[in-house]
Each structure stands twice: as structure tokens, then as C-alpha cells.
Image (cartoon, rainbow, N blue to C red; front, side, top):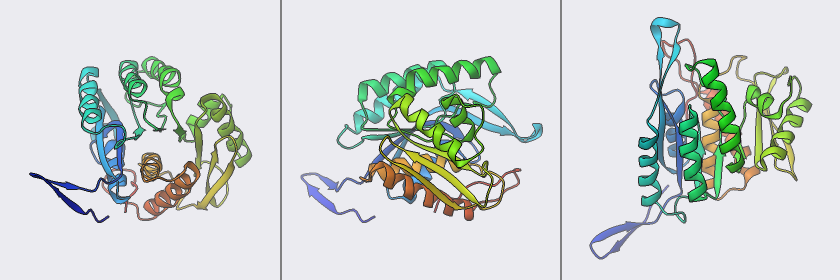
Length: 280
């Protein structure tokens, strides 16, 4: 994107690009979390900023399990204070929410969302916080559904999250996924892009968009039968980026689907036992 300099007194002012914020965890290898969000923003010509909520690092000595360290809530609040003060609402109106990780973090972020009143809040509802004890993870999931989901304007649940949020026991068909998306919309009032991905049978990776008046099935040929790390983060960040650039929810969903499909096709391999989406 070309930015036109505008000279004003002692400063050189520039035409403001689209801005978006991610509130998410850091994943050290770059395959998920805030790293993916910022790369997605950059690839889509959006200026990104990040408030980190936790640090996740895989343990190669223990079957690449997760090591999870939450960021102190006051540090999270400080990051968000700096960001929202530097960029007023007319500049920064879109935020994407990724892994929050603890009820204390959720309380901190929910307060900022209520006080700031972002025009668009894209929630990637990470309901499995790997690296936590089961009881703590359940408390986090409940807090997320109680305090953050009602503030979202766009929700991007994966297969498991669609079941959890909708209360359905199974999602095995496109019709099931559509029903789940409708239930989540009714629960939250948000637009929903429910991701079937490789979890539904058939040659296509299918997602379903629902916003109350529109139901649209988005499909693309599967690229392999195994999920690729960072796909969910990429999709939600791409939705946020397109919303920041002025797209409507359905247009943002369509464009994000195309972007993440291309990223899966051009996946990055490493010595880790999983491939990751390449944002380009």
C-alpha cells in the first residue's frame, strides 16, 4: 500500500492506513498467536499492534507439549492503555481476540472492550488452553463465554468450539455445522464463521457464515487431511484486517477463506511435527 507523506509544521504526517489490534498469546515458533496475526495484518496492508496475554512455548523434549505462562493482568492492562491512548477510536476500531488463557486475563480484556467500545470485535474463541490443568481450563472457558462472547461482533469457532458454544453433541455434516453456527449467532448476536476444515467428510474444507439474515457455505478443496497450525489464527486475523479496511462481514469472511486456503497450500515445514500456515 502506498502512503502519501503530508508535511505539517515540524512533522511529516502520513495518510493513515487501516489499523487493527490483536489481543493474543505469543507462540515462540511463530506458527500461531500474535505472530500469525501480525503477519496476516501486514500481508493484507493493515498496520497491526499487539497486546500479549500469555507466552506459549512448545517443549521439544516432551512430545512438543505446551508450556503456558500467563502475562500479569496489570501488564496486559498497561499494554492496552498505551495502544488505545495512542490510537483513538476513529483510527483503531477493530480488534481480534485470540488466546486469553485465564479468568483474570479475561476480566482485564473484557473491561477494556466495554470501556473502549470497538466497532468490530473478532473473537477466535480458544476454548482449549493447552498447558493448563483441566479445572483451570474449564473456568477459563466459562469466563470467556460469559464476559467476552457477548461483546464480540464476529466469532470464528473451530469444530470443537462450535460444538461447545452451541451445546451440540456432534457436528458431522454441513447441516450440523450450519445449525451450530445459527445457535452461536442466536446466543451472541455476532456474525459467525463456523469452521469445518478437515473435520467434515468430503473433498472440500467447508465453513459456514451466519449473521441472522444470511447463511452461506464457503468451501475450498482440502489441502491434505491434517489440520495445519495457525489456520484458525490466520482466518480470524484476516477477517479483522478486511473489516478494518471497510469490508462487510460476509465479504470479510469470503476474503479470509481465500487467504487462509492459499496459506495452507503454501505451508511452511520445520523440524516440529506439524506444518504451519504461511501468510503471503
